[in-house]
Image 1 (tube, rainbow, N blue to C red):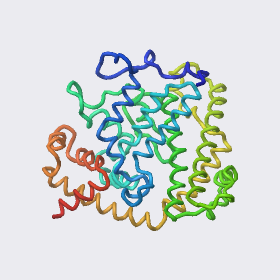
Image 2: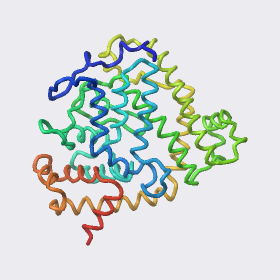
Image 3: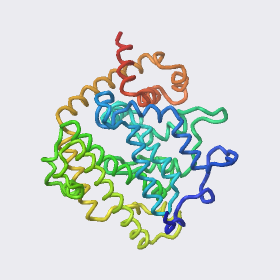
Image 4: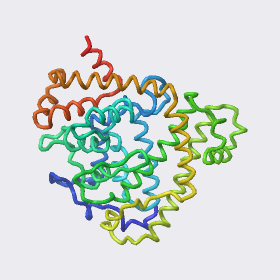
Length: 366
């Protein structure tokens, strides 16, 4: 493990700690405890039943939000370890970054945002914070998980081409390097694994990708022409893309940190642009892949049709629960008095798995 940038890493000494003071654990660091609290919370388990791209249950090999989060954490740890950063903090942010996602993926988020337009909107990064600060309640002495400040900041400032953090109570322009690693690890995982699942589904194929430079490079690396099994080829290609992007990120970030005018952790927070980066060449290749996936995969007719169905499902359920909040569990009925009815209904729906959402819809229609 490199310790070249460990002076930028968040540590227990430099941390702003927890809202509610707790005694140190005898054999786990504070950030180890954050990771463990996230893994053991209900919202994390429910990620298994939430859409990544394809609705859960269609094919056991497709990613869901849980497997995606685990893959992001693996990539994030690798990058952090090689830069000498805080692995446990990186892992905690990676594992929690999608806790706030609603059923039916980004489509569900857009629908809830539309439904909540007059009541503050809906954005999954902010919802992740609501979950860890308020909605989870496993401890007798406080609401939420009482995570470390830097873990929560990493969730609030999670940023990518498809994730723009909303306004929060945090004053920092940016999060720690560990939080930036989590964001770039998310981007690597999303594109490589959505590409693999898209090819697995048959909605896109390798012939369509022959003008996409990063894919062509991956096929050359694995000698794809010698591989007769398409399932093997697409998996190896996705892994090769991950390897290329992770290696590039580590090298480009090292060079960027050495040349950047930052000396302390506070300088990191005040730096509006991320310091964990790709090289310009890799960034251009990744953008090309992202544009291909957007035009040929995410906007594929079959996925658009599913999105339209989800719009109707969530809209109907939202309106029904607003009219009849007694259909929600007692906890959420009581929460509505504190948080407002519409926000609480959004909290309840956002926490549902795809399957439970459809079952709830059937129940209220009966």
